[in-house]
Length: 92
Image 1 (cartoon, one colour):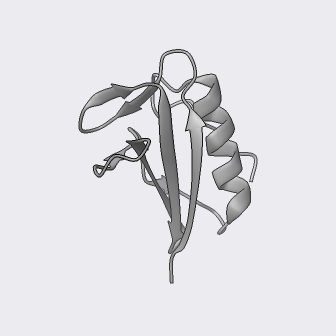
Image 2 (cartoon, one colour; image 1 turned 30 degrees about the horizontal axis):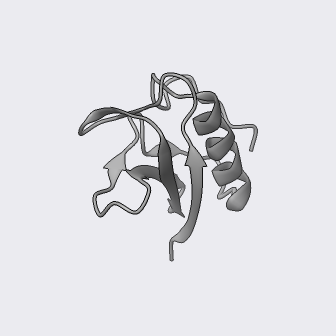
C-alpha cells in the first residue's frame, strides 16, 4: 500500500520543473507517494485540479523513508527546483 504525503508551499527561485507543462511557480501543493521502493512526486498550483509530475520522478529508493523524504522534497521546492529532481540528493 502506498504512503501519501501532501504539503502546501511557495516554490522558490526558478520554480519547479515538471514533465508536462515546464516550470511551475508560486503557491503549490506537493504530493509524495512512496510505494514499492519508489517515490512519485507530483505538484499542482494551489487548489487546482491538475497534477503534474516533477521532472525526474519517480525516484528509486533503497528503503521506504516515509515522511522524512517528503520533508526534504518540500525544503528543495522552497529553495527552487528549476532542474526538477536532477540535483536532488535525499539524505534518507
